[in-house]
Image: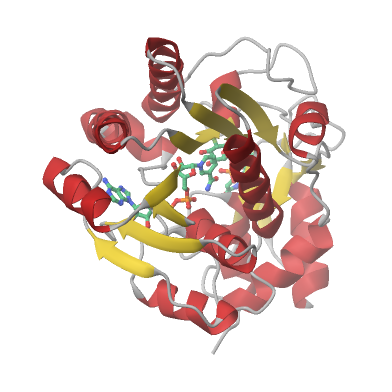
Length: 332
Ligand code: NAD
Ligand code: UFG
């Protein structure tokens, strides 16, 4: 079976390709390389001994999509392509709506044309907004505090509308918590351009000496140590969750499934810094500074539905996340 992976040269897509290939699927990647490089796919091939087919192109380009669906007999699509920086989305909202919403609509239209109705979509725990209660189960009310979050809400809704518009769609909307870590080989990992927005790549760059100190955004939250608490999930566990979601979709007649991919465990910013100190053997200096606007105090997943529906649960803990991220960060 051939699976189309949009955004497959990116962080989560590349790790998921490894898991897909190891589960016996053939992969074709569509990526415009706006936040990645094609070399990632060579690194994937080093791990799996199989180079995925690669089409450099944009999900917003209908002609590219039509050619691709003509050239390959695609069984299902895993849709990762999109822009993901929360801060940037407030500066460039139209770019986010164009890429994430219009791009997704183009892709789903091309799937419909080609008669491909099996889809796994990258949603986010950001759709829960500021949690009213924890852990976050899938029926928690949704809201969005920034344009990026809005695009995820819109695409979730677009899929629901599409699902009800005609029979035969098999879709999984996967709400990721905080993906971190890297493949244990150290050959692929997260490679943010410029200053990292997210905690773990920033911490990793402080550990290597590339940046002087971590800014810890807020120590006055109502959490055990006052710093923000999140559900960090190893990217290889996340990748395996996609394989399970794909298998699930392939065996049902039609369904719109929405599940969290998280660990259900909650760690603070300081917990993560200390775990990274263990992994790297380095002291990681930090300053306690003001809260980052738009941040929530705490967020972690109710994982019961993912286990019930997909038989999947995350297995790797924070030390493994940090060890693997450090191996990637210190690659030669
Ligand atoms: P990433 O930026 O590493 O990967 C996205 C890939 O999509 C990149 O390779 C980029 O070049 C490509 N891309 C972007 N726009 C495209 C377009 N119009 N056409 C073709 N390719 C395009 O991001 P990631 O962390 O791997 O995230 C993957 C998906 O998961 C995104 O949809 C993101 O919103 C979602 N997500 C990520 C996180 C996270 O913390 N990383 C959390 C929740 C959800
Ligand atoms: N943090 C710092 N210093 C930093 C960066 C982050 O203290 O330099 C803190 C934040 O305040 C927060 C925690 O570390 O308490 C995690 O922050 P991240 O930026 O790594 O992640 P977020 O939880 O803010 O958001 C991430 C993705 C979103 C996604 C969400 C899902 O960036 O796209 O996880 O839970 F929606």
